[in-house]
Length: 151
Image 1 (cartoon, rainbow, N blue to C red):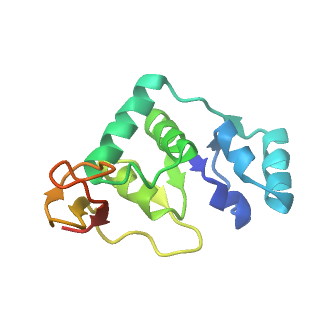
Image 2 (image 1 turned 180 degrees about the vertical axis):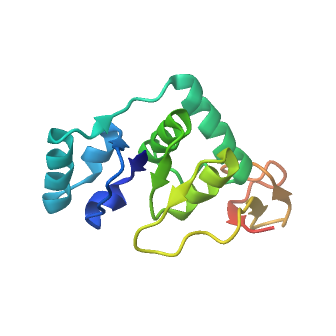
């Protein structure tokens, strides 16, 4: 079973496997990609709504990897659907791939190379240079902005 991100519809991804997506993906699609979504839904593509507890688990994993700020509401719910259904997530999004790796969710990429390694991000203060494991708007020491960086 494959769980399709919007990139699957944009790049006209085809498969013989059962396919699933979430309603929020349709909102991201325009023109031909939107028509593909509608056609696949009409021909049996499943629409899944993940459980809130699974969504919380994905959000926690995204915070642990440092990708929480990079993921949209749609991304988080797609990851939750793939986790719940034990399916393969079809996406080109690197942040989603990183969190999927953390959750032990299989990923298939479409138009880009997949990730080579899982990354855990840190956030560094642009003023005093301190680093934090979790994302914050400002440094709690000096008040400067934080920037995401690879440790």
